[in-house]
Image (cartoon, rainbow, N blue to C red; front, side, top):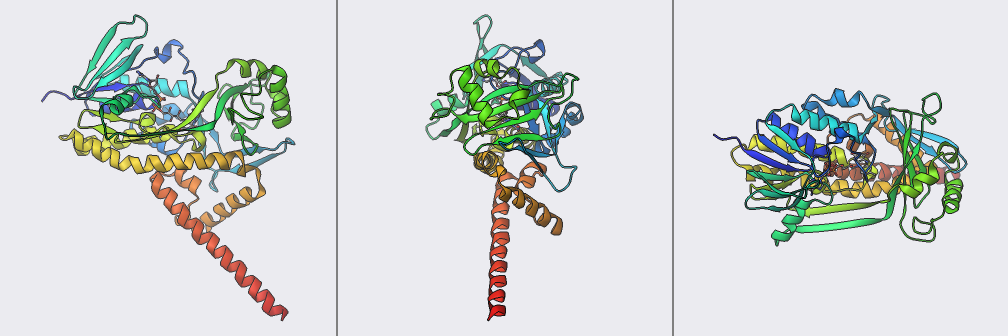
Length: 442
Ligand SMILES: Cc1cc2nc3c(=O)[nH]c(=O)nc-3n(C[C@H](O)[C@H](O)[C@H](O)COP(=O)(O)OP(=O)(O)OC[C@H]3O[C@@H](n4cnc5c(N)ncnc54)[C@H](O)[C@@H]3O)c2cc1C
């Protein structure tokens, strides 16, 4: 029997990983990427420089035996370090178990690792500088253009998989062709800009290394993740428009004043602040939902191409990696019926991707506003206390999302139920105490 050939579009994080999974199953894979080879110094511009990798993503890497290689370069982040306006710091651990932490990793290094993992299989070929313009769905053929020579080419297989990110050309071809294709995009009014805190003169870190730093300022915030070279990558999430926003903060003086008012403890650590603010791009934050994620046995979507989420739960890549695991399982379970495999993959992932999209937007409000409050810190302590009292039964939402592989939708449902029980019990207990107190006074 001839080997099935998959054409993958996009060798970002999920594309490289999926190519490795398919290669391991013995499929023939041609992976096309519009950018140059990242190993030739091509920067992954416009998206985050580092990311938080957690349990779901690590599990996906472990299946291919490359988790240790990736984690070798990671920096553990054991909790949130909250910076208030006066410069006071409050540390809030992510979990009651100090061995549970998230990992700061560089996007470029991870991208290279997954591409190299794919290339270990002789049946996987990776082609750079080839941009997909559209896909002939019925022929499972991607039309490509060489970004250096402008020559056109075609990538033909038994199936095309769009792993080409939030602005997927494969998805756009499905939108054009399929009348019943559902599509929804929603942009936050906030954009993001990346800035740097360089290493200290001795090469060390200028702030606590093993933490995700947050400067919550109600309607906006800045965060910082550590890098192995001693630097931090800071990301400012701020309104595009409004009286104080990216739009109104034009001059160096405006920028300096804004940062000195809002992030006074960070300013002395950011010698290139003004230059970076001027020169670094301002990215937008989009949630994309669509359905279905497949067409017959010919086309499927994976990762941000199927479900772009805003970055506030640190789960976009983790979820994209989980997609690869599930698609691989479905292709194994229905190896003779690819359409069934695609349908099964879609039905296992769609509800969870939708749940994650909601959780990610809600977590923006938690990070930029609630983390600053005493009530938030008290709630986290209560969460950890309850988790200790009834281990395995009470699990905080953050723990379920970040440190388990409980499907996102189930985690969200379980957290809602837990909250109802806990807050209902607290209200009932308070009422009993008040009544007993009143009786005692009579
Ligand atoms: C600021 C920010 C911070 C984030 N932080 C985290 C985090 O901490 N943790 C986390 O899990 N996730 C995080 N994410 C989300 C994460 O970046 C995405 O979920 C992840 O990159 C999705 O992977 P992907 O492979 O589906 O898409 P991408 O990584 O976007 O890869 C798509 C690839 O396809 C290529 N491509 C696009 N169009 C074409 C075309 N027409 N032809 C050929 N190639 C094409 C692109 O060049 C790219 O290489 C963050 C995102 C942002 C913006």
